[in-house]
Length: 449
Image (cartoon, rainbow, N blue to C red):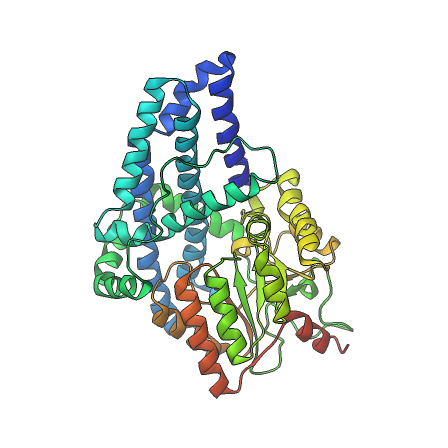
């Protein structure tokens, strides 16, 4: 897993440099990665990724309105959707990289006896705080997810370090403020007022046309071949396999039958808010969680299970599986499944590849099938990871549901906009006569069990 390896590499490199004189020659390399100039460059890239996402959101909404007309039209055939999914991978990877640098700077300040290195690390850390607390509109909006990422990394690191040998030391100064806004409504209002400007900036940004554009083209190629689902199987419709029988998209569900799915949690605030409205509306959902988050928030497992929702696997740390070797795949798929099954207290039946990457890759799907799991894709994507406006997230999901009339809806239970938008969607669906199902129930139904 690239992200996990990067974390280990950073920590290992730092410890080696600070405690092994023989590796002192590598100190300059580390210093270069954590200088104020490099930190500023990383943060500015985050603003470009965000604004490019705003532009691609606009493109997607236009393109989907023009080209998605019936149940046979697929999201993944749209160029704007392919680019958005690739951008999601780049954004996730980049925010994780920045948060790891932030942790590394704290470790340097706490561990090093080199006064010059400590001084330089403090300058870089001060820049972090200055830019992430800036009143600059683009910074405030673009860094919202980064603030949450940094604070979650701190919490997870402190919690997981209690269960394993760790060189991590809690920071002596408070972590970054989790939001630049009083509440999410304030953020949404400012976003709506500035959206045209952000989209124009994203369109004109040179970043995607060079470095980022090359990444996007490569990821699109590795992520996508069209995902189909046929109803003309002999015997069971679904069972663990590397073929279509082992992949749920939802296109063979009965009409007005939908699976509501949430990725990337659990989150102590947003997951709980989702549970509250699901309970009020008497709807069951399906949660695809990351093992590293579950370890840090095990209290949420019993709460979700007590309300009858389904718990599934979304890897250890949200890596792009298509880029991993066998060792990386073992950690992200096999080891995460073992850990989650121990915490969940039951066998896991469903798995989802981050970004959908690996859905059509034999070596990845075989590993999933060998563990007795079905892979779950989607045919409705709310794009709530980029769009912070719950109203437009809701309308995007509503439009796609009306088009397909059945299937799997993708949200993420780590964003405030996802809570608001998914509640509105479920409330609207009640009037439409929609049936929300757990994946294990619909599989049994379709398999005639």
